Length: 443
Image 1 (cartoon, rainbow, N blue to C red):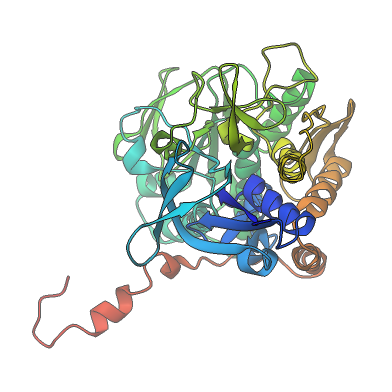
Image 2 (cartoon, rainbow, N blue to C red):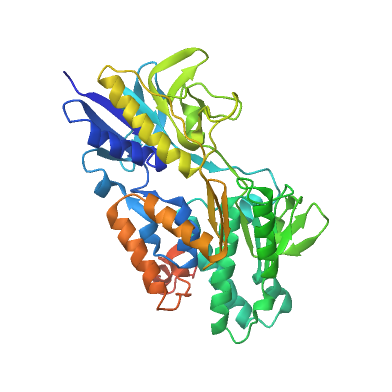
């Protein structure tokens, strides 16, 4: 029997976990697993706020693909087109000409990107919070703004530098806001020129509540905790413009802010536009509960999808409901999908994915959190501890678990690092200036 070729498009939560499980369940005589992703690692996104705040090393929040997927073929590149009628994908490697990869089964898991709106100035002024690069940039930027505020004699410049605006009150926005404020407040002890009250942290949320994944009372508790930290919470308010850093809100308020972080939702990766897979009205790949791609009533043989980019029916709810785009579902869907692919290759029937959402956990900064798990609600230190314990158990590989625990353990005895490494974002600037020919105009 010739081994089946399984192509995995994307190495996020779904892609990495599915490829890892397939490589363990299927022998090399049964299948060859090829993983294509432009990044050499999978980012464990729930750890982005902690990495940005300096609680863990940024390298410990990512999982190297080649280390974990040793029985798979890893291709560093981008899938630019998938023609499932031919069962061929076009891959553009980092270097060299594009090439086609034929497959027997394809896992479509490119994930999601930030869902933005045509708000004036957002493209020029905003930054997302979905990648490790964005998280580290935000950390360096916030600390750099403290340096700016400490030395400027201009009160307007200081006020703008110390105003930090976050748009979106879901888990990503709340955790990023809370962790960054916690870090900046910690850093203030080294800035005698500034007072914590000089900082202004603004949350803009278009709906009337935050953390829609938990009950309203837990969302209300979160808002109360943020208000106690003197944060400016604007519910039922929209960002209307941020041209040149001037934030204009739908409630009529206007202020300058050097930092505008957009965390208002996600949408399926635009890479799906270059495929011939069926999509729903939200541009997600339509799937059966077995994670097989479906076109109307017809199963698309050999095509599978899960995670943020897939519309997977939620069998624990009324018909018409779909699984939420969360890491909790993505990891479990990946395992079920890998088992189903292995079953189909071995001539057996696939099994439906069914998982009742167990709840949610969120960090609100060091030793602060909110959690709702199996109907049990917790706040403060217990919720924060549960948040850390849960995510430590979920990050792939023993290597990463140990490193994260060591980071946390050291933090009990050592003070948090609050130094900005802004040169990371333009490392050649100093060399370019030093290597200018004599007499040449400086750029």
